Image (cartoon, rainbow, N blue to C red; front, side):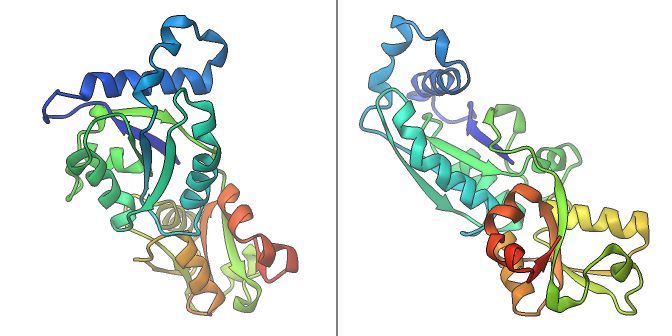
Length: 245
């Protein structure tokens, strides 16, 4: 999971420089708070009265959304100027639509952040269709967690262990988001290939929240994505035993 803001592109340079200085300031403030001096605090007027927008590439209720809203709740208090911070969900194509929006549509003025998967950058290198951004022109801000991918299933699916998955007589339906650049799709494909697991990937969900709901309704058995996300957004089912990792 990554947070990015636009460093520059081919748009006019009118407000770009001040905006980028603002985000450089923000990065220092977040990760090296003890390094401030008077000249840094002189930048306060840039964020004062402004609204920072976090564009999340997945649906509400999933890991990316949960992390972004937690950040938005507290971040503004620690930024000189105390800007308001809002979260906007922009789903589609495994967060590619959000990434393209931040690059093509959003102004490079330092107040728009994209929260989308870093795997999209590999897609640019590999010539993936639909990519409209230049990854080199995004400024990396940080990541809320370090992911450790797990596979979670509902108890009702009957897949309560790797052994049961391996011995399933029918393909186990697992949720995906977008082929080629999302964790649920890639992790499941790797497991299927490496362990010869009987698996059918049902892709096209807008985020892990939708995968979770589909599993709970019996549409699929489960999905594979980051433990920090699973444990935060599926906590009640995990505690009750209705969901199993």
